[in-house]
Image 1 (cartoon, helix red, strand yellow):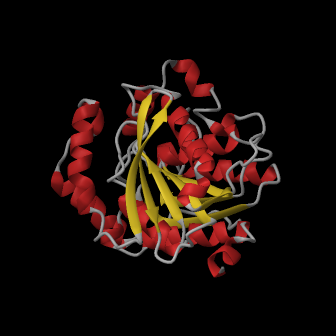
Image 2 (cartoon, rainbow, N blue to C red; image 1 turned 60 degrees about the vertical axis):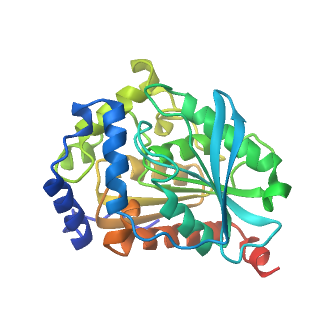
Image 3 (cartoon, helix red, strand yellow; image 1 turned 120 degrees about the vertical axis):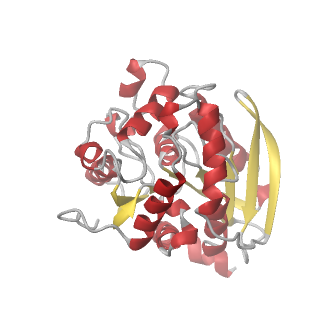
Amino acid sequence: MTPSPPSPSPLDPEAQHVLELGSQAGAPPFETGTPEQARRAYNEGFPTLQGERELVASISERIIAGPGGPLRLRIYRGQGAPSAGAPALLYLHGGGWVIGNLDSHDEICRWFANEAVAVVVSVDYRLAPEHKFPAAIEDCRATLNFMQSAADELGIDAARIAVAGDSAGGNLATVLGLLTRGDKNPPAAQLLFYPNTDAGQTTDSYRRFAIGFGLTASTMAWFRDHYIRNAADIGDWRTSPLKAESLAGAPPTFIAIAGRDILADEGEAYARRLQQAGVPVVLEHWPGQIHGFVSMGRHGPAARQAVAAAIAAWRSFDPAFGKAQAD
């Protein structure tokens, strides 16, 4: 694990530029409106942050049965991915459990598919507040179960499926990694970008970066309060995986930390607990970056670099990775 930066670093120019764009847009904070208004604003804004969509070998969509009704999946096959036994990734989008969809994280999924020479599956899981905790978790687990049961059809190795996600999606990936510890084929790795691991929202980074760095403390509280059913859910480890009694047996883990992010401290705390439990961990810092930077590929190289770092860690956790690609 790389050591934590001793003090806040200057903002990266690309992060500063994105913050300036947000200020110029003058959009009201999500918490001043309804979830539907937040979704519309987010859907209008994310294309300005992301670059041109690179080509993958194929993209298809599929509807599967989920615990709360049909679930829509998007399946990406990377350029050069083997037709059978390919490494696979379940990607869970961020958005505070309230916003986000298959399109908002399409760019990241394409990068993973091509750079990992893999198959990536993204799921349009149920959102809060219409579907509160634990609906999203149930949908994510159902998708992982589908990937395992349909591995031959998808051309993937059921024993070599990783899970990944950013922010709230990182929370869901983390919870999925713990929920499936006793399964026949638990996730082979978890790749987490600035994950939410403690719904208590009391770490010092909530004070240091409460306003002025994109995601604010008040917006994060609004997201959480839409997601949970009641205050007791804050202490449930399926909402706050940092509160799990034991992290032993969790998948090997990559965690990317944005240095100017209210979630920075809980991400680092989760990495420490994993390491103490004997779980292989790769922890990397982008000290001058802000929350959500992996979804800002139009404005600089950091987003693609973070995905490449996650893939490098994934390969290091999986001795069979290179063999599958060479066959």
